[in-house]
Amino acid sequence: MHSGEVLILILIIISTSSAISPDIHNHHHIYLPTNLEALQLDRSDSLFCDSWRLSVETNNAGEWRSVPPMCIDYVGNYMGASGQYSSDCAVVALDAAAASRALRVPADDGMDAWVFDIDETLLSNLPYYAAHGFGSDAFDDKSFDEWAELAECPAIPASLRLYQEVQRLGFELILLTGRYESQRNATIKNLLAVGYHGWDRLILRGPSDIGKTALVYKSEKRMQLEEQGYRIHGSCGDQWSDLFGYPMATRSFKMPNPMYYIA
Image: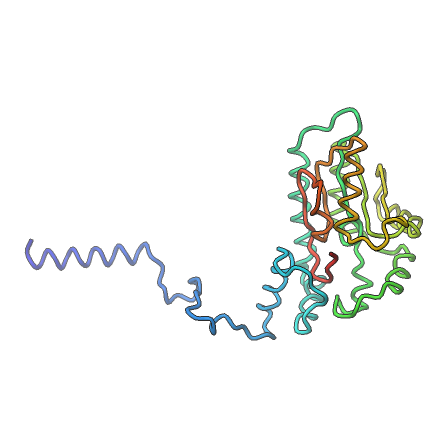
């Protein structure tokens, strides 16, 4: 091969490579840190808070007690003005609705069930948490119980649509909440007022459940339901403790909640 032919071949290879490979200096290219120092983010940067929320929602953060101080405004914006929380809820609800349609058609015995948590799953306590620092204030049982007794929690719109879809498909609706038996009347009043009707069971903490973690309490209640013959096809909750434990539903769906953690 002559030198001129070699030069032409090299130019062709370079030209072809450039056409199919992105420019590594292009600002759209994925940034890959080359050292640990490059991973240190400015802790006032919203990137950190975005990453912190991802860690919370994927349960990588494990048990956590309060929103990082630099993320309080971020959480408030996420829950409200940005519309991201509503969008995230809607996507979870769409996924759950699709799963409910794909599951086996409920039998005629009335024992095919779908379990819903209540707070931050069917009902939103956002007005209460907006007044208490979006998770930055220490949780106060007394003030929260007073809020719950008002029965003024709005429905989460995406959850209400999901609830109605699951109900239309013929599943029995089981409401399993960490609220106490003493709050039954206020809870029923609130649910009915915002459009939730026709559930089969509303299970609240009784005297024997006080002191149990949510994970233990809700696992025990699901076990009792299965012992009674229920087949739990789906479960929705805003905490991993709503969903984990034995037995689990066939499909479980985690609603977003960066405001607090319940073990």
